[in-house]
Image 1: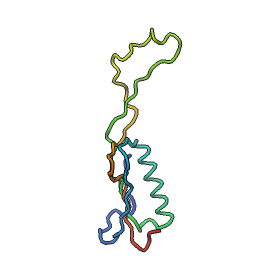
Image 2: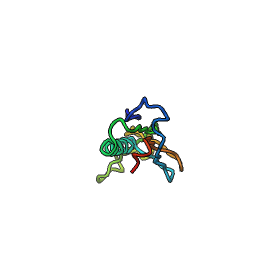
Image 3: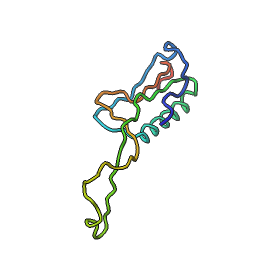
Image 4: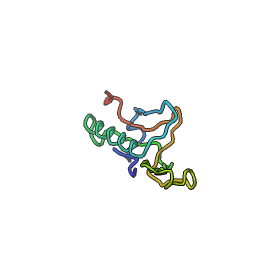
Amino acid sequence: MRIYDVGRKKANVDEFPLCVHLVSMEKDNLSSEALEAARIACYKYMVKFEGKDKFHMRVRVHSWHVLRIKKMLSCAGADRLQTGMRGAFGKPTGTCARVRIGQVILSVSTKENLSP
């Protein structure tokens, strides 16, 4: 994920007094793909109903945690070909953000008269 701020980034705090947060209700790992999909869906909704310069949206979590996978064979005789858990660190497959209970994931600021 490369873009964390969208909308009117240079707006003053007083211009958008209403701030809506997406909050995590449980301890979880959010993949960078899921964060990107949430950002795109929220951005498209806000542009459709508000306009490009009528809001500011920020993704508040960053995906730093690296996900790894240890590939295993699943064919006949695989037990003779593999080494088990020896050297099971795995190869990186993606990144995720670790979120806590009550942590803000996404924030959208807009004007009060524009809220649905």
